[in-house]
Image (cartoon, rainbow, N blue to C red; front, side, top):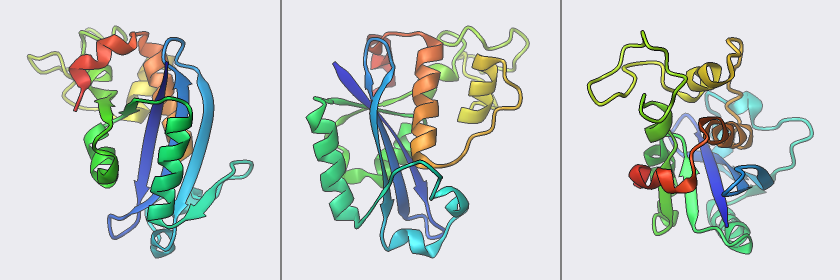
Length: 183
């Protein structure tokens, strides 16, 4: 079975301007293939992360939103994907509302909780539920999981989707564990 990990970036108008999708083996959580889409004309409006839209040696497709949705759907279907994962998945799912019929799961729901992330320090401030009170974005979680205090998120949709898949691999949970993170 294969899964998809998706990340999105928005422009200054909070419109979708890029989408990264990594297909991964559900058991090993290793990347198999990826696609990077830049949405035209929305990317032309610029955004906080416009400077990393075009990354050397990263193939991309500049498409209209509808063309991207068709290409993304075909890409995921070609790998038999039924489940989409994303960090803070409500955000990405809202931007890709046309894909709301797919099963979405939020990686953050495991990464930010003491019950699922054994790298959360004993002295970390957590809610009664076990969720970290702060610093549970992709960057601080990857720093925590890898021990690399210098890690910085690129904020390129494809690179970030790869990072989010890495979080899943570092956490070491089976796909079944993510049932509690279905949105």
